[in-house]
Length: 89
Ligand SMILES: [Zn+2]
Image 1 (cartoon, rainbow, N blue to C red):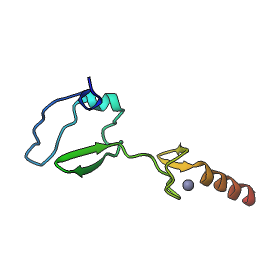
Image 2 (cartoon, rainbow, N blue to C red):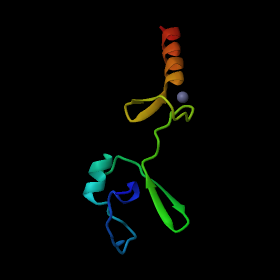
Image 3 (tube, rainbow, N blue to C red):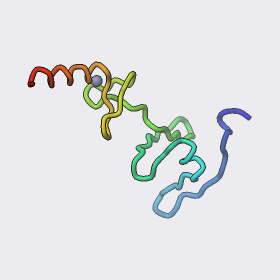
C-alpha cells in the first residue's frame, strides 16, 4: 500500500463548514482536541492538513527544540536563557 493511501475515507463538511477528522487519524497522529494546532494549506485542488513543525518561540528555529511547558525553545536560546539566569543570581 502506498504511503498516501494508508488511510482513506470520505467525509461531508457540516453546514458550518467544519470537517471532523476521524478518531483513527487523530489517534494515529497524536492529535489532541483543543490542543494540537493544525496547519492547512492548498496545493492545486488538494487541501493539506499538517501538524506544524514545532519552532522556537524566541527565534523561530525548528531544529533541536525542547518543549518547555506549552512552548518550544531551541538549544541556543535555552543556553542564552540559562546565561541570563546565572547573571541575575
Ligand atoms: Zn531559539
